[in-house]
Image (cartoon, rainbow, N blue to C red; front, side, top):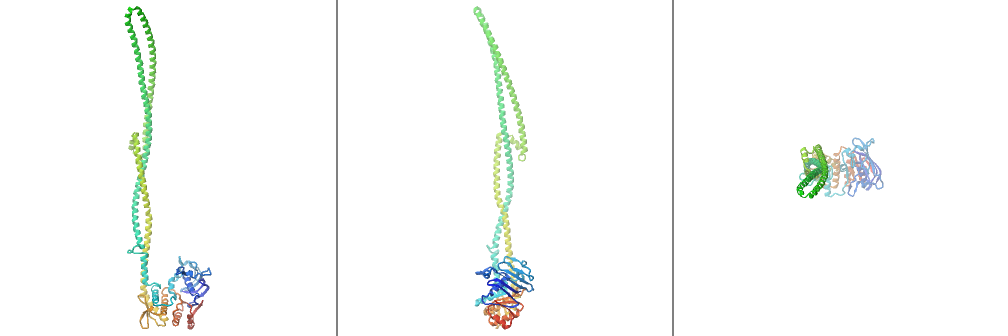
Length: 613
């Protein structure tokens, strides 16, 4: 990969600056605060996007946001090893840049998008931002190194070789992964970890699920009981309705009975009147007989008096005259009385005939009404049976209809009680059913939560498997690096260190404990931290140069930011010659505020592209 050119529209305090870069050495020279760090940040941000995360007090974005312009953008052209050329324009206020191919076709959408934008360079060369910064770019970080800092730096270099990260060793990575498993997942031996909480919750929900399923069975039984009770309730309701109808008919029957009773009473009264009339007629006849007796008494008395009157002629005459008068008077009275009695007797007989007719008529009415009532009652039975045959049998209906009014009222009372009891039971069932409904309704929630928890558990287990695979891959990679890549890497590292130290140190390796060992001129292998700061810086650069070709098939540019601050003139001359000879077909970008690099380039006639800022 080679950066052909770039243009800074506005970035930090640099405005409208265009720079052309070439293969080989590119020396970007400027005094302190001239903008070298700004350009380096711009290059990195153009390729991978600007970092808006605060590191310390200010983010990269805020640090280089122009003060005097709203324009915060730039462009770059770069080439890959396969000859393809690309153009990138980036507005740093936006997440997604514009990427064009060599024919200026917009290929931005060909790259995967994430919440941070698109990582086009990562997709093209397989190197992410962090790896690029740790290998392709070498920063001058320390001014003075004491023994502790030397050991720390040597350790970071060893980590860089073994893991690709300066700040992580293999053991630390494994430890971090183990801690990650413990904290973010957990195991069967842990408590209160995510997997433990999920398992505990699943067990609890499974128990609740079984309880709800039992409730569901209870619900089905209650539904059956409810349905049966509803049928019973409906049946009792119809029976109640039927008995009420029967009761109404019985009340009508009682009313009719009252009418019949009145008719019967009237008949009885009329019969009594007939008896009275008969007695009255007998009295008339009896009186007539009494009068006849009186008449005969007069005759007898006359016969008795006649002999006495013989002696008393005068008296006889008087008596005869008196007798005649009495007889005439008595006969007249008798005839008159007899006539009156006969008239009275005829009137009584007439009344008797009327009463007899009334009785006959009333009896006919009663017989007719009785017959009609019996017909109506039979019709009522048939009508009731047809109407309620689905709820009562014939025997029950006959039993009810054969009761008297008191029996019907008693049956009504019993049915009312049964109706109320059934209604109360139905209300109980409905209340219990509502409780069961609310409980059984939780089944869906429980099943859904169980499904979610099982999915979460599956994710955690998959995550755990991923970490286990990562540990295995890390171990395999580490073992491969140690057993296969390691020797080849040590050979390449030793070659570079030998070249830049003028063959003073040409045997360097990294042991199993990740210690960088250098063979001294006395044949002793010594840990890197025991050497001078200048030597450590040389090995630092050598490590990066040796490592850079292992991370990508692309020949990445080598970017050195004040990397030679601890080099003396001899060391600087050696490294400049080495870079010009070994990397003539590779891009090397050197940022410096010193004149030493330019002086050596001029003295050694080293081909270089000089950029002054």
